Image 1 (cartoon, helix red, strand yellow):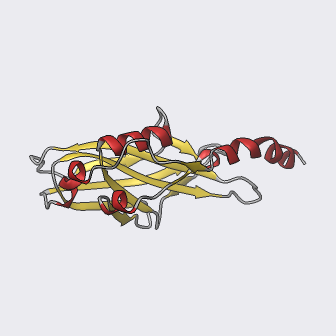
Image 2: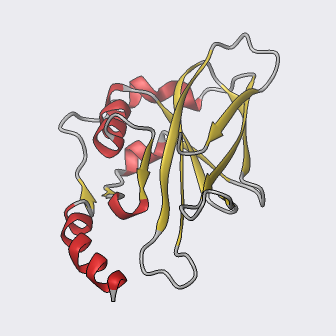
Length: 170
C-alpha cells in the first residue's frame, strides 16, 4: 500500500521529466571533428553504482553502452540540460533525450564488460564527456533504481599511460 501511494505521488514528477528537448543552439560538426581523428591515447574505465538499500551491493554496468562525446558547446549545453549541476541523475528523473543523427555521428560508443569495465583506444586530443546509464528494478520493487552518470576528461596527446575514468554516480 505504501509503495502504491508513493508511486501515485511521484508519477507527476517522473512524467514531467520524461522528455528532454535539444538545446536551443545548433550542433557544429566542425567543433566535434577531432573525435574522427586517430590519436594515441587510451581511456579505460569502470561504471558501477551501489544500490539504495544499505549501499552494500554493487551493480556493474555490464553490457551497457558507454559514450565518448566531444565536449563541444552543444554537448555542454545538452549535458547541463540533462544533468544540471550534478554528474548523476536518478533513474526516476531521467529524461529521454532527443537523438540528433549528426550529433550521434560525432560520438563513439563501446559496451561495458561483465564488471562494468570499458575501453576507448586511439583517442585524439581534446575534451570529452564519458557517459553511461545503469538502471534496475529491485526485487519486489516498483520503481527503477540507478540512473545516468558522466564524467569529463581531457586528452592532451602526451599521455603514456591510459586515462582512468570511474563512473559511479559521485
